[in-house]
Image 1: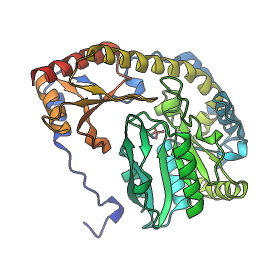
Image 2: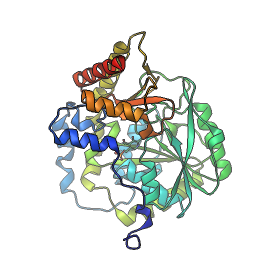
Image 3: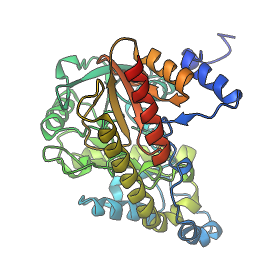
Length: 391
Ligand SMILES: Cc1ncc(COP(=O)(O)O)c(C=O)c1O
């Protein structure tokens, strides 16, 4: 078997204890309060179905004209969406993909040779490990440190044989935007070492308030290094099932041109983005605004409900966040985060993610999704806090 299949797939696929316990609870028919849901189509939002259908009405019958980086009208719609966020781009700086995950895959092909390293932030979204290894690259973590705000720990960056540097802003699950100071320093180091930055901004449309010191749109900030900023319908418009993401490329002109010419070749090999969703994109970006508004309101209301439920004297602490769909709750360190998540599932029927899933290393932390329906969230939090009080 080992000789038959690629070594890229050699990571462990063993199910963890929590996943096993969840599967058993679901199989037994036990109702669960799921505070891990991250799929916006499953949390009772009102989708503008007619507007979405109208956007697709003419799109499916268009003749097929392969355009590797995306049809011009769709790329122009992405440029207009960046303008909404105050960023001026040219259509030639934009490439369309089927998702942000595919954006990573294309960029890893563009930037890396097998065996090279991708610098990945920690704590962060755990999929980078898989995305890098599937392109025969090796993830190497660098740390983010918390002192009330999250900062890049520059001492933890090791630039040996690096293919690319990933930054997630706002980061998932910490909800932290990269600060101007950290971005400029990282972009400077990237340029000095001849590397590109891949900045995942898929949650940038969900700020919780003004962030004076933050880079809220990386594509709008000058950089001496090449910067790929990732976005997509999945989070920005709550439409993950329509499969459309984008890459905005900024930095020195010659590097941007060189990158796009090569990206075109890679994308031409797959032509993975469907024509109908590209033709529908201007309408979808408009329709998606109402979904985005609902998600942001939901996130803000659930966060406020959590603050209220915690009150002034709780043994739990809610970590501050500037954006995003998650809350990180520090719970008493009388057991591990994994044990807390297991206890909440077994005893209370409440599903949460332990912080270690995201490489959070500060004591015992639980990660709660804030896009969950409000009554479910409130009941789940009430049970969680009652369990903490009783333990
Ligand atoms: C930080 C981050 N980037 C990318 C993705 C994946 O986005 P997409 O659905 O566009 O592949 C996620 C999904 O949760 C995410 O959390």
